[in-house]
Image 1 (tube, rainbow, N blue to C red):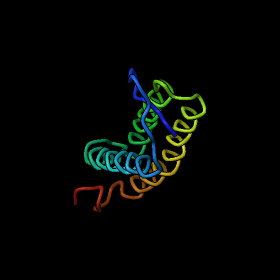
Image 2: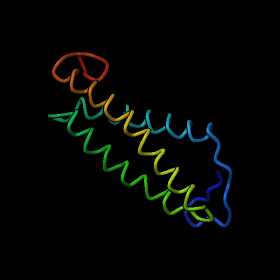
Image 3: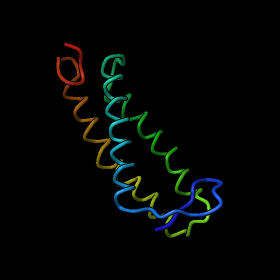
Image 4: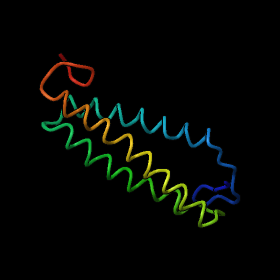
Length: 109
């Protein structure tokens, strides 16, 4: 697949490894967000779920508005965002639900 960033003059190759690196980066960012919310929010699981769903919606702008990119590639990348979110968000949300109110990796003990 080849895709260009928004406003780019040409497309670049997107490999499975580059997509995986993006998923790992977003998962780490999501975990950090969960840790902050676990310490500061009254209902961290709900706050994380709502915040992460908004961030996923925003993240869809990038593949859908990619320059010099075939529509099939745009849709494939957007679907990849949704699949990754459908896997990662429930796992972190469930962890926050179980950690709420007791010490653990997401709570200060």
